[in-house]
Image 1: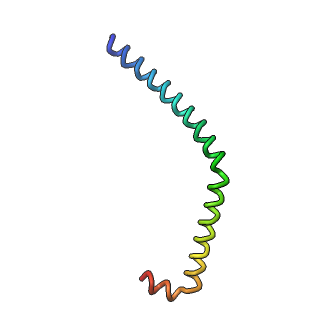
Image 2: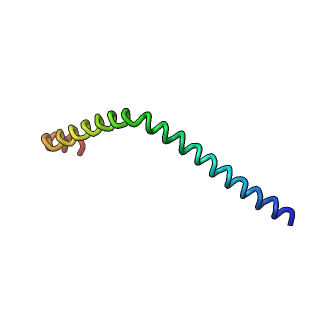
Image 3: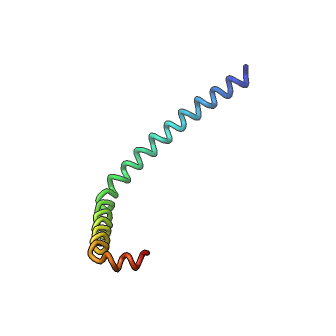
Length: 70
């Protein structure tokens, strides 16, 4: 009975510790996302423009793209 009690109490303790760690990590992660948000949006926009230009290139120069990739 003693072994079961110790095991059960350790599982409960570990669950509480895990919940606390997740809550603290969530708060710090959200703060990091809020401060880095504008930079991520800028880089995302640049990448989106490059992908769009690549698609236009492939659409305009279909024959050259076919020879290049196939």
